[in-house]
Length: 239
Ligand code: UDP
View (cartoon, rainbow, N blue to C red):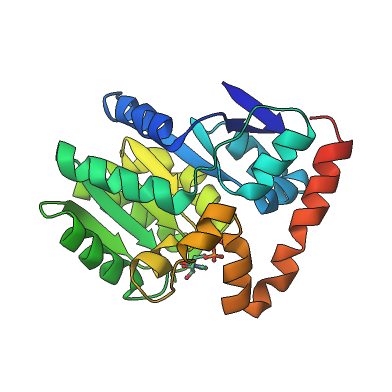
C-alpha cells in the first residue's frame, strides 16, 4: 500500500517488509528502483517535474525520516514506521551476504566508498563487492559507470551522489546497469566508512537524526528549515 504526500508516493512499510520486497525484486528479471522519500525531496519535486516522475515510477519509496511520519499523521494517513536509507542499506547488505548476491557502491568522495566496503566486508564475511566508483566524476562519464556496473554483474547497486543527481542517474542509466536493485542512499557511505559519525541511539529513537547532523554540519541549517515548510504544505495541499 502506498500513501501520497505532495503527489509523491511513499510505501507503508516497516524495515522487515521493505527487505522482503527487495528479496522478491532480486528474483525478478528487471531492474527495480528504491527511492528515499523525505521532506526535502518532496519539496524539490514540486519544482522539478522530472524528479517527480522518477519518484512516482519507483518500485519502492521508503518513508525516510520523521518528517514523513509527521506529515502522514497530520493528513490522517497510515505511515507510522520510519525506514531510513542507511538502515535499509545495512539490512540489504546483510541479505546480499547471506544470499550470495553481489553489491556495487557508487558515490561519495574518493576513497570513501572503498572504506565503507571494507567495513561492510568485515561485518559480513563473504560479502561480494562487485565494484566501487567514487562520485566526483562528470555527468558525461556516467554512461561509462553504468557499463562498468553491468560488466561487474552486480545484483544490487547503492548510489550515494546526493539528490537529485542520484535519482537522475537511476533514471538515465539504471537499465544499462543490468542490476536487479538500485537504491539511492545519499550520504550513507560517509557514515559507513566511519568518516561521519551516525547519530547516537537516543537521536535515532526520537527520530531527530537530522538535528544531530545539523549540529555536526551547521551549513545544513537551510536544508533543515525545509521541514516546517514541508509540513505546512503537506497540511494544506491535497495530493
Ligand atoms: N556526492 C557525490 N558526488 C557529487 C555530489 C555529492 O558523490 O557530485 C556525495 C557526497 O560526497 C555525499 C553524498 O553525495 O557522500 C550526499 O550526501 P548528502 O549528505 O547531501 O545526502 P543526504 O544523506 O542528505 O541525502
